[in-house]
Each structure stands twice: as structure tokens, then as C-alpha cells.
Image (cartoon, rainbow, N blue to C red; front, side):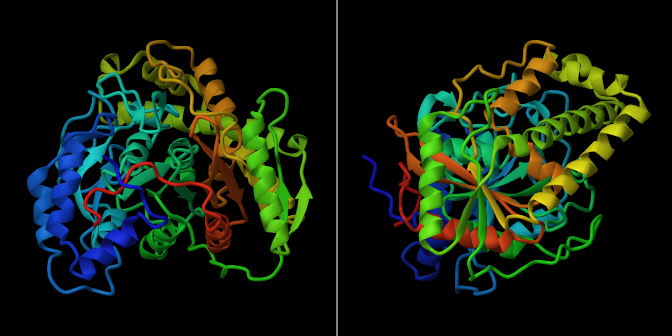
Amino acid sequence: MLTTPTQHDDAMALASAIAAGRTSATAAMTASIAAAKADPFGATVFLDTELGLAAAAACNGAPDPGRPFLGVPTLAKDLGGPFAGIPMRAGSSTLADDPNADSDLAQRFRASGLCLFGSTTAPEFGLALSSEPAVGPVCRNPLDPTRTAGGSSGGAAAAVASGIVAIAHATDAGGSIRVPAACCGLVGLKPSRGAMPAGPGFGNYLGGVATELAVCRSVRDMAQAFASFSGAARGPFPNPAMLEADTGPLRIGMVVDFGERYPVDPGRQEAIEAAGRSLEQDGHRIIPLAWSEFDTMAETSAQVFETIVSVNLATLFDTFALDASAAEPLTQAVIANGQAMSAMAVWERLNQGVLVSHALWQMFDRVDVVLAPMLAGPPPLLGHFPNDHGDTTTHFERMTAMAPLAALANIAGCPAITLPFGADATGLPLPLQLLAPMGSDMRLLALAARLESEQRWTHRFPVAGLP
């Protein structure tokens, strides 16, 4: 029988319990491994018990204040990274299980005390906002197994929401941290461009639109993860100038719908309005914004995202002589699109992305933060993003319709955070999204912490191994 999770049923709570001697890193890892092996949601694709137990054994002993997640089990996403000892297959049968070396980010994960023992489900090459790769498994939402856990970090979100682990590695090129977090009632931050390390191989660089971090059960976990992993990225961008969290009144631009083309269900609109009222009571000024001010930016961002991932995938298959015929039909179509693009067409699309960034900066001349729904509706049913066809136009349009403002933050380079702000009648989360200018990550974390303090959302599953 499930226990009732506490407000801070999270990674920091588990780390504190280990530090206080109420449990051990080995006991926590043993519980996470057992939960992963019994997982009914398809959250994981690879487990290494010996790797996990060895990492945990190295963390037993005296607490280390410099390692805030000491002894906490975690999982790597099957895309991005990489992490030594964990194969990166990108949800595909086309990649070999070559041994990996730690990326710069992976080194920071381990330095914080996190203990890796496996990897989580992702759609093939991250091409969907659902995680249902043909090679399996199908990742289900722990809050409603008939629905998607999101993508492409769906397995990470399912693992954290179901309590297998309290925090998991995730990546975001077009909403892939934030959408799964929103689907599963978690916190997801897409950091400012340049804030997170991407080297030394830059395999998940994607022209600067992709970034990596984590999905978490609390804002405090996300704040600690950001503090532990960000900064001194050593290229290819300058380190963004990070602003301190604002204490004075802010101008909050509020968007409650995505226009007639992408209707937002009433419950999600009401959650945004409720969040606006809470922030207004704190002294912030709410400025209504119309979707017409965002629709061109959103549409262009989606087009730029599609171009970048198509050309990137075509280049990947060519560079490493991968067998495209072994990939999913949708992946094959995306590769073909990338191969057919001229250099001039790609260059023009990249320039359009620059203009999107400039347009959003102009928006931030009027407001300090944008508050909007993260998703237009509840997480779609499984099968909403089929991979057995080559209709890329319909596929990418469905992605935009699910989360119309997701890709904007990636193309513009600004930070964006999502967190649940209540539940609908079926118990599914009502997620909101906050966006701010580059370098305002701490501002978003502070606002998210304030909204989280209202305790409108409770996790359904406890964290494995947490006393």
C-alpha cells in the first residue's frame, strides 16, 4: 500500500536521510533497483545492478557538504549525456552499444553525489513528445497509464513520478524536459543557453537549441541541480550573466490561451489565472498578453526546430554510416527531409530563429516574466504520435498543438520552467510555464518556489528508499 508522500518527498529529502544515518546509500540504491525491476510503466531501458551498487557503496560513510545529492540514485536518459558504463541507444536499433566516456555534465552529476544505475526510455532520436520507440518499451504515464508520459524525456519523467528515483537526467531541444514534467506532475527547467556544459563531444548540441538538466519532484531539487551542474560550460557560448532572484515587484505577462488553432481546455486556463492572482497578491503586476503577440514566434520556432533536427539527423546517419532502413519510418522521413534541404534553405531558417530571439527580447522590454499554460490539454493517449508513417508535417504539427510555446524557449535561448499548479477532475496535473530573459533562471526558480508553496499538487507515489 502506498504511503502518502510529503511536500518534500524528493531527492534532497533522501540525501538528508542518508546524511543523518536514517538510511544508507546502499539501501536507497537497493530500493531503487527493486522499483525499476518491478516498473509497470516502461520507464527504463537499461539497468546495471552492479554499477549502481558500486556507486552507492562509494557514497556510504560521512556526509559531504560539497556533494548535496550524496548517495541519491538516479538514471540517465537514453539520449544526450553520455554517461560512462551506460549505453546510449537513442531509442533506436541503429546505434551500437559502444562504451561511453563521461560528458562534462555526467562528471558533474557524479560529483554532486548522484549514483547512476541505468537509463530511461526515449522516442527514437528524440523525435516525439511521447516515448514509444519501436524497439520498446512503451512508456506510460504513472498518473494514467493510458496516456503518454511525454517526450522525449518521458522515461525520466515516469521514473521520477513513480518514485523509482527522485531525480533523473533529461534533455530539452523542443520542450523535452518541460513537456514530460508537465505530463507527470514534475518540475522541469530548460536553462538559459550557455548555462549548462555540453562538451566535450557536443553530441546533443543541435545548433545551440538543446540543453540538458533534469526532471525533479520539487523546485528545491531543481534549484540545487541547477546550482550544481551549471556554469563554466567551456563553450560554445559565453557564460550567461546570471541575475540574482528578484525580490521586488515584477511585471508578469499572462497568456491564458493559444488562440483558435490550439485551444486550451478551461481547467488549464483557470490554473494560469489562479497563478496570476497569487502573484498579484504578492505585489507583482499582471499584464494580460494576447496570443496574437506570440503566434508568429511560436510557429517560426517550430519550423526552425524541425529544420535543425532534420539536418542534424541526416548528418548523423551520413557521418557514422548508420543504416537508415533499420530506423522507424518516421525517422527515415525526417532523414530524407534533412538530406533534401539546401544549404541556403537551412541558412534562411537559422536566420529566422535569430529574429525570433530578437522578437522575444522586445517582449521582455515590456514584461519581466511570461506566464502561460505548458500544455493545451491533458497528456494525449498513447499512440497519438505514431512512428509507422512518413507524414512529418502532421507529426510536427501535433507536437506544436500539444505545447505551442515549448520550442520558443529553445530557439530564443531563454530559460523556461514548468511546474504543476493543481489537478483536474481526473487527477492529472495542471502545469504552467514561466519564461524570462536569458540569465533569469534564478528568477524563475524563485517564482516557481513561491507557487509551489501553495501545495496545490501532491505526488502520488513515494520515493523508493526514502524513510
